[in-house]
Amino acid sequence: MNQYDLIVVGSGPAGRRAAIQAAKLDRKVLVIEQGRRVGGVSVHTGTIPSKTLRETALNLSGWRERGFYGRAYRVKEEISAEDLRRRLLITLDHEVEVLEHQFARNRVQHIRGKASFATNETLAIVKDDGDIMHVTGKSILLAVGTRPFRPDYIPFDGKTVLDSDELLEIEELPRSMVVIGAGVIGIEYATIFSALDTAVTVIDPKSTMLDFIDKEIVEDFTYQLRDRNMKLLLGQKAEKVERLPDGKVSVTVDSGRRIVTDMVLFAAGRMGATDTLNLAAAGLEADSRGRLRVNPETFETNVPGIYAAGDVVGFPSLASTSMEQGRIAARVAVGAIAKEPQKYFPYGIYAVPEISTCGLTEEEMKERGIPYECGIARFRETSRGHIMGLDTGLLKLIFSLKTRRLLGVHIVGEGATELVHIGQAVLNLKGTVEYFVENTFNYPTLAEAYKIAGLDAWNRMGELPKEAPIATAQPLDTATTVTGAETATTEKKKAASK
Image (cartoon, rainbow, N blue to C red; front, side):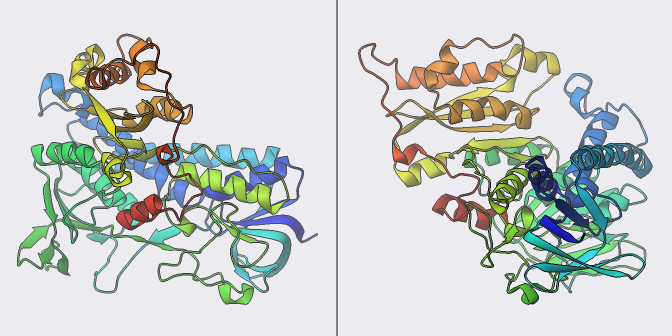
């Protein structure tokens, strides 16, 4: 009764997709989840909560309407932490209900408990009542995700000095906040609280931020943050954090500057949640950040029959790519054919404003020696942008001069994470600049920016002679794949995202 074709540890994006995929192939599947409810970090403390918080903040603050009605405009004058939490709980309940229904209709069994290896094929599960049961799997997939990195020198108290998980439980909104860490998570929360009119200061020892994003997009994004009075102390390290008697927190940086604030969010990295798995019993070993190394094409670890997917394997650490990794791993684990995913996948940063990117950056084009041209469109150039009251927003397209193919799409502004999928489709279908020039887009929409940027590039590139065929794609025109985690491009992005 306790033998399975596939055992999945963790029910986040990678785990749930893997379990359902294996179940659809008529395999006996068990999911082990140590949290109170299924969904993993993505549903309870990560992707869904942060995006729900963002949407609630923008709606209640009237952020999107301030272009018309001024910076003092509010939908709700006094926004409380309870206002934010109320919508969050409704969203989380819905997500859990959907996931439980998916497990039920696909006949995926799931158990609540803490799993650890007894052997490379057997897991011990400690239930809430202390009982221990053992289960055996022909294959085992580790999709345990990550948790916030909590160094000893930071005096976490869950109230005024917090990590990104604890931030969701705050009882009142701070008037001021220091965010330590200018990575994706730190920047997302920093800009969300800034939209709620909290005075935010971001500190990071690196002199730049979001290095895997096209530099021109980051420059535009940075300008918008500074324009609304966010303080960016880049190239400065937070050396001391201490709680003060009056309830405030003091942060001292290596330049000697001291900031007194209501709240500190430490968001400088995450750790793979592998320390309780007894990896040694299975012959596995994690790196210094608790992550597991896998074959980038099959997601199998160095131990045959044991797989890992999602954030626990490192970059790109996206819910979308984690789902795809889980699906591929499950198919390989049960002996089914796993098709290679499309070469280009989008990366979304749900800050205020949003950033989304797909394909090669201008810096990568230069490094690879690919002759190129860019086309730019600003949202204020579109009728829809005027209707929405947008003063900001930028879409950038990068084309190969040799093949005229689209090789990169980069967006900062309202709806960027939705708009990017048009560019993603053209990238994967090997479309050229002519597609944007000749295509018809709904009017008025922000998607018109693609036509404007396409025309901008086309004017610079010159019209293609009618008798000259479009060259076929060259090897240099390919970008990294979801599974190609060890390519030079991905290595660079992995380092930048830490």
